[in-house]
Every structure is written in structure tokens, then in C-alpha cells.
Length: 398
Image (cartoon, rainbow, N blue to C red; front, side, top):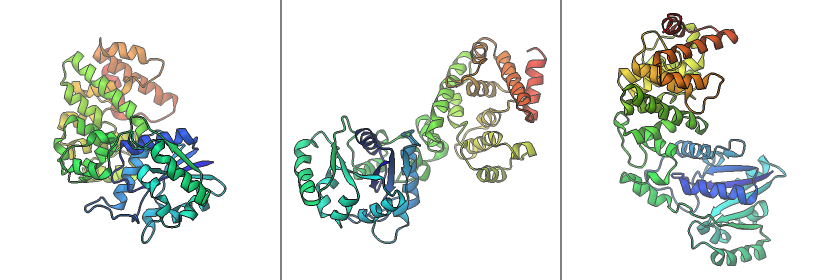
């Protein structure tokens, strides 16, 4: 395999880092790209008030996940567990032991590339890995790269590749931290990373999570799920907004409900149970045994108790998976938006979408009937709320 090693403080990881990573994968034909957050960088101290190692690791993992290449991308925490300063030569030695026989490439920006010969043990570094340098500004072209590339090749027999990245987001982490303290800079960050920063109150962003703007709420919610879930969440939000306009509901409220409806989708079973216990949510044996049912309950709990949503949105999220008898308008709309958003594909979806805009209760009835049918076909126990909804909306001919 050909493996790229991309180290840095990632304090915070931003769109420039991701653009460089994509360019290196494409230029070198990498089979694997490994992000390595630095423990204690040897060339400079971390800025005062920096996030903890665990928080930088979490941000790096969130950023890497945005590339949507889990088969290629990996985050390795080896330097965070190392005592003392984190030297690249030591990291590459560990990498060579972890991936014996594979071809390693060390990825870096222009500034690092131009000073590489002054690092600790440059000969060892260049014996273990090739070097791929990427330009971070329009000025970082062949005129800058060529002298250092020639020197490293002559002095160390180094393998060197240089990559130009058109339209690279040019922002230093230092400048970005300053902007965040001023309430700016979100445009330089993946939405999910910015959401994590708000959620953890990093870099002086002391944000009240119960009073977030819709845009910030999106970012925080996105930071809690894997990137592969985002097309569904975005599709659900847009569908909920369209249904709200059609049936006279409040569009922003439905957007907020949709943004949060899957926010605990990837929580562990233990996390779900802890949240239900904390917020007094009783669970039946069926619910304890079914993760798909738990995320609606815990998502509703966080929506209310952390993000300041009222009982109407709480109930819409709480019942978006099962439905129930006597649903409110908002509950119906979120249930249907989740069921039929544009990413959904099943034989009856076109008819469900048609009904949703012409016969709202008919659409809810159809949705519950499909759920009953699926549970019967899979020989699974039917949730009582779904059965009650089916009885009300379908069997009565609504």
C-alpha cells in the first residue's frame, strides 16, 4: 500500500487541511491517508488555552470523516500517548513497524518543507518516507519548491513530490483561533468541526446551546453524527420545510426539529440508556432491545434539555420513528419528512410523496401501514405506538 502520513497540531483542523489531504490522495494515488494529531510539537508550544489532546483528536476525527472515505482515511493517536516531544522520525519509525513493507509518504505544507533539513534526524525521516509538499498560497510554486527539492534529493537521496492546490483556503490556525474568539471564522471550517467547537466552547466561543441560530444548530447537530448521515438530515430538513409551507406549520420550527431528529443516531447503547435514565424516560423491553427506537427518545431529550426546544418539537422528534395515535401537525410532518426525504428509495415512496401534499392523514396512514408490513415480513415485534397509529389512520379509512 501507499500510505500518506499527515501530522499537525490540528488546532483546529480546517478546510485548508482537508483540501491538502484530498490533493495528496489524488496526486500520489494513496491507498490510505493517516491523520496524526501532534502530542507536544518539538518546534513550537501549543497556544495558551488550546483544547485538550482528546478534543483535538475528536476534531481531527470529525474533519477526516467529512472526506467520506472511511476505507482510505484514518486518524491515529500515537503521538498523543507519547511522553515528551513528538518527533516525526519517531512517528515514522512506528508507522514503518505498523505497516511493514508499505510505501510511506510524509505530507506537509510549504513552510515545513523548506525547513525539513533542520528537523531532528532528517536522514532517518527521508529514509523512511517520501515527502509530499503542497503549496498553501498562489506564491508556493515551482520557484519556491525546486531549490529545496533538489537539495533534499542530493543530500539525502530523498523522494520528493510537490503539489499545487488551486483555490486552496489560505488560513493559518493562529489566525483562525483569533477569528473564533471574535465570533468569526466559521467559513474556514467544516460545519461539523465548527459545531464541535461551539458544543465544547473552545477558543473563547462561550455559546448558549439553548439559544442557537438555525445555522449554528445545524453545525452542532452535524458534529454529533457521521458525515454519511448528513444527506439524510439535510433532505429531511428541506422536506419538512416544504411540508410546513404546504400545511401551514411554522417552517423554522420544522427545520429545527428535522436538524435535531437524528442527533443521537450514533450514540452507544450505554449512552442511550444513561440519557433515558437522566431525563426520566421509561423504556419498555422492546425499546431497550432496539437501538432504532432509542435514538428518537434520546434525540428528543437533548432537543428539549440541551437545545431549548419546546414540547411540540420534543414530541415530533420523540415519535418520528414510531408515529402514534393523536399526532399533532408537527409530529405528522416530521414523521413523513423522515420517511420520504429525497434519499429514501423504496417501491411505494412516490405514492407516499404524492399523498403527503394532497392528503396528509392518508399519507400518515400509508406510512404506518408500510411499517406494519415491514415488521410482519421481518417477523419483528410491532411497537404499540405504531399499532395505535395504524389503527387510527389506516383501519378507520382516514
